[in-house]
Length: 474
Image (cartoon, rainbow, N blue to C red; front, side, top):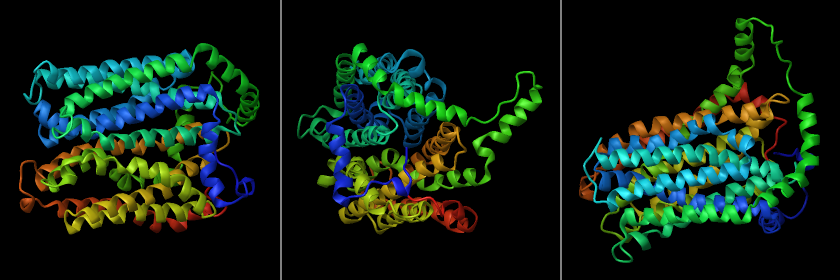
């Protein structure tokens, strides 16, 4: 998915920034079928996720701690579900798999939304509305575990190796653009406008999921899918021949079981100590990703209570996806000559350090500075992380390394919900005057945790950094 420095297209920096959007407009119909669906799904997923902890607080009656863990069941459950069901897109065909996935998510979202409509709750942990909501989340987890891998598989099947980078970049960009649109959901939620409340907004998101199903059904038809695969087949066939030739030697079927187990352990990506250290060292800074939905909505709503920003907290908590959509191509164009490891250190530091702005207390300037600078840092290091995972992999094992590289993100989504609710209840509890909150301490602790990643990368530079000397960011 990355090119060498020598193969990097030459031209004005502005052309490198605008070219992905030009490529998007020229994308074939099959890719539009996937991209439009993914755009809608980005809107719905992030829109519902941003409200989910509040929904568990107000409509289900859970404490901050229990709400955080319930949200975590969705986020880490999706990652685990991908491990189990991610291959269905190859077995069933991407169109069929995407339609099945979206149908599961539609039913799941309707199940969550129907509880308050039926007059259930808020009755707390283990109540009918809580169990109903968790059943809905389970369906979403199952659906999303099929959906995202199938969408990425569709991009691979519908593009050539030469156009794959554009296809994956646009899928990521459109998801983030969709994730920004819930910034305006306060117009639906707030009683000063339509006054639908969070359950009412959830019904809108449920209806949008149905729109995503129809978009996929009518744009990505079986004929369009077949033609797109056929057009890209020749180029993929050549690439697969090259990759299969590079596959590592496998043990014969007659080898003893213990030999097979040892061979698997010895060749597992995590057996590479540098690779393992590198990906796990990023867990601390990745906790800031999880706080975007576990902490920020409640923090802004509570710490800025009585202000326009506190009432319309969606504008702040959904700002990151818009910035990512804008900044990733710009930052990439301006920094592609830089060494990957250097970009990892700088990016993680720039992402973590703005957290300390929030230790000065709730203020719009501090919040805006945190969101902008944190996102710049994210745009600097996140693409480089994926590139490194691909480049360090031995020939023929790129997919294995890319898959394992996501494991720490899975752990982050397991770990962060375990303490985020406790910190909210201790330092930023609900129904508490702003003067009695202690959000400064909460963000100080989170900032120290996030900075650990940069410190570890700096300390390991002599050990890890030499592997990056010949590798340039793209």
